[in-house]
Image 1 (tube, one colour):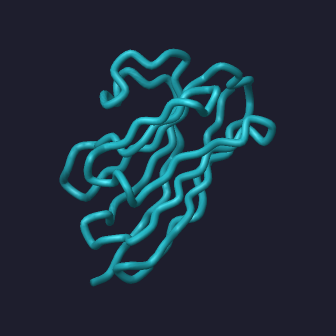
Image 2: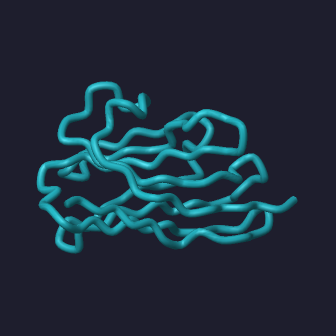
Length: 124
């Protein structure tokens, strides 16, 4: 059974940084692309960033481009999201996801596996 476990969330002030981690276990995710989504209260789950297995191709939502960086360590089965210059509008539960083949990177239903999420709160 596949497990994705996020960590690293917390309460920070605007302008601060956080690094989220997502550890994969329970099955091999070799070849899988990994991504991050976020969901604010009362809103839909939105795409944040994704990275292919090789790490050579990344995708970002325009709202985080230049501030967030996604990376992965395949030897550790872990994907990271470095978040800099955080804004109050970044406040959300952040979810890690995995997919065998990216079809529509921004669409949650096209992703195969999900973590339970980690809360990120940015105060102004």
